[in-house]
Image 1 (cartoon, rainbow over the protein chains, first blue to last red):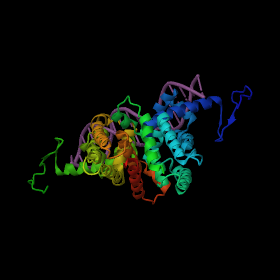
Image 2: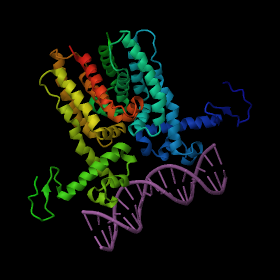
Image 3: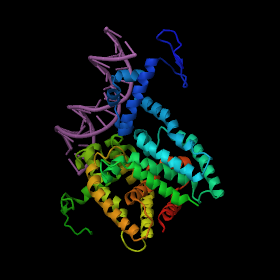
Image 4: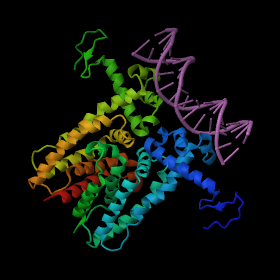
Length: 217
Length: 217
DNA sequence: GTCTATAAGGGGATAGAC
DNA sequence: GTCTATCCCCTTATAGAC
């Protein structure tokens, strides 16, 4: 990955997605992704405007549309860019060590994602809340497959008597809902707890207690 | 509620909110509320259009705006109309009988709300997800007060040794997130479980297990 | 009270100069 | 590659006849 190209400033690199991009193009698209994440996650797709995204990205609206052909294209590309990272914590749920600890680690990692990447959480929440029009296929294929795979793993732990019997898929749903709640419904959490209160330490303690008591044999 | 008014078709009734309304006005506003609930919950505030609401309500757009002065006014009125009912299950959490059963009843009632009133759940989810611009004050006053009150009740149950020790406010948050998940993220739940699967029976069994194991002394 | 017609403005996207 | 100017549709809201 070192800069061993010639000084030709239209030197290209072949990207994973097949699009060739110069260094400047990469920087601009990165700025657009960052701005789009802020605006789409806060306002939803229809609520967001290209003006806001352009302002946030520090460029003009036509300049924005030089890099992406439409508002829709920005949104779709952003979702695709983020979705794999978003599932990494679940992928990391593996059969190594103590099953309960593996699950608690997953809970903690997912809660940390809510704390550290609340905009990503709200971006997906907005999309799914409105029926997932741009992620329908993904949810039914890749996500379903991953959940089924991890549900089998959990089922094996139950059968082996390592954790108590629960429905594995609803267990996964419950981890998602409990952890993402703190990012997605942040406004409500802070209205109840006070704007200054950081809920995450208490939340982690609560969730560790919850899953330990539910699952410990 | 029988029609014992005179045949005078401008006969009025004094409403709780102080607005006088004829029977026809009540019917029309009811139609508008029903349509607005469908459209706002599915599309969010910005995503919804008056055309859609008017179509759904079976009237023309100017006719809609004869009854409400703006799109914003419809949305605000709808939220205010629904929010009290939405909190009824939590209000019903009282100190009578067995504490664990009281909590399990609350969980079941809240899950039934997700099953029977998913549009209401998504309406509030949309609003809170985007920072609760129209409910900020309500969340910080009435909701906070109710949560604080019920947290005290739960704390008394813990102190009396009726249920195990947990953070009462996070317990309430967890009930909200676990139950509302099935309405708000319906698209994801059905993508994973299959479109035909009704998740609510399994969800109730799972949640009863979860809260029983966590709280039973 | 309800309609048709339309004003007024926002917002996505394009033209064309530089 | 980036800008200014602009097109044009969509959407909210109003005017005014009936």
